[in-house]
Length: 236
Image (tube, rainbow, N blue to C red; front, side, top):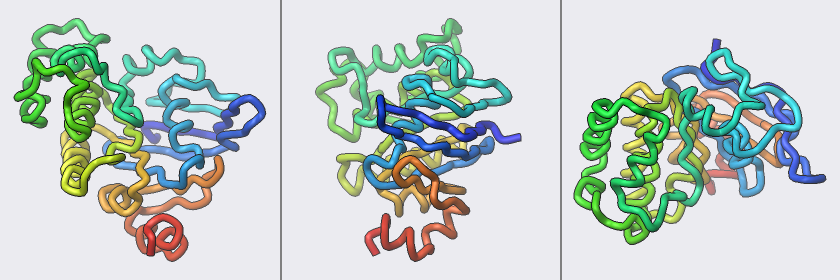
């Protein structure tokens, strides 16, 4: 059985049908990419998975548990962490306090301290700036902080929304290297990313969303060579 199974998921914004019965699955240990144009429903999908939005119908099953009526904080406890679009760090708090808030569901002090050291090892710049106010960090550093904060909950699966948005090409490469290393450490990744070429280059499988429907799916290595995908999303 897949780690995450989404079936016939429908989500409305008032009269607007944002998701029109999408179905997909994520297996443990995979990187899955969701690609599509602005307004296709990618962020809506992640917000519904993590309890920020509520589904009109359909099901979301994570490790055998139905999530559609589960509050967001309980979804974090079950093992899904969210790195939102635009970072959404706590701008007025320090780097250290942001990371501590990522572990709000935990009470194992020794484990939290151990994971903090792992985060500093993975993101040396955060270690250098742990006492700095988070809002003064560069865009790339804020993205690292958002990822580090999510990892502090010890997730089984991490969902990331546009992690490369607004970053320099060098920083984009660094962020994608980090995503690959997160998977190598055993965390499953569901990735929404407008940089389709980069996303497909690290993903195992991918789904293409168009106006609330999945129109294409398959191995990422196949989709990156698909003529329709290349024209629509890879600028070729």
